[in-house]
Amino acid sequence: MAGSVASEDQKFCLQEVLDTFKMCLSDNKEVYTQHYVAGWRGLVKFLNSLGSVFGFISKDAVNKIQILVNYLNGENGSQYVTVQSMVKYELENELVDITKRGSHPESGCRTLLRLHRALRWLELFLERLRTSTEDSKTSVMCAEAYNEALAQHHPWMIRKAANMAFYMLPGRPAFFEVMNVGPPEQVVAMLGEALPLISEVYQITETLYAQHNLLDLP
Ligand SMILES: CCCCCCCCCCCCC/C=C/[C@@H](O)[C@H](COP(=O)(O)O)NC(=O)CCCCCCCCCCCCCCC
Image 1 (cartoon, protein in one colour):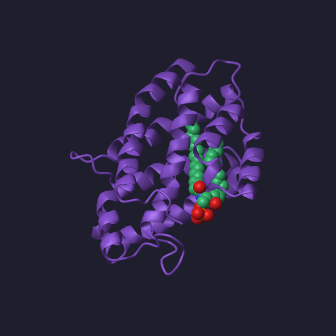
Image 2 (cartoon, rainbow, N blue to C red; image 1 turned 120 degrees about the vertical axis):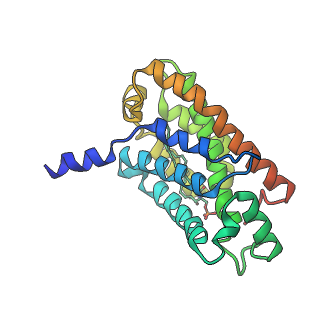
């Protein structure tokens, strides 16, 4: 039946997605844009499998992913291979709106910054999941991580909508099920391995952006 084919398509393992973040780091600790974007693609797929109430979130993520993919595939794609080279290229060529939105409203730098902030949310949420107990609520863990990492960057309407969507998250057992990693102990072990890598990618990007004063790009 068509329905079962669709669900077969959607079935995937979160471990594979988190593994993509492993591939993000080059030997000299630069962040590969292509793998970073691929990691987000996988996460969006996961989010979509949780239901259409999260559509407004995945739509924004897809939009930002697409902006970066377009740069990667564009005529200056070689400048976008790593986040480091992107920052250098866009700054040197004045392709970034620094204080207010102007002629470069969709620079790679400001676009990636949005995903970068969301990566901090992911790190905090996954850490809460990892250390949670059977009766912990995914909606609470998600909201706490959101309030700590992202809320301050969002207008009131988005905060409101996000917090409403969090209530629709499946409970911890069902959530672990969708992750498709195995029994809870295995999920916890997998998160324990994935988190340091996500955290490293986050820290490297954070330091880079801080060095160039890019953490508040409009
Ligand atoms: C599992 C539950 C998923 C909850 C997702 C938590 C993040 C909530 C973000 C809410 C964003 C709402 C949409 C709009 C955002 C934009 O305004 C805003 C600012 O952009 P702008 O300056 O261009 O306007 N955009 C953003 O901050 C980027 C948001 C990107 C969110 C990507 C979320 C992907 C979530 C992947 C979930 C994977 C969970 C895996 C857990 C095992």
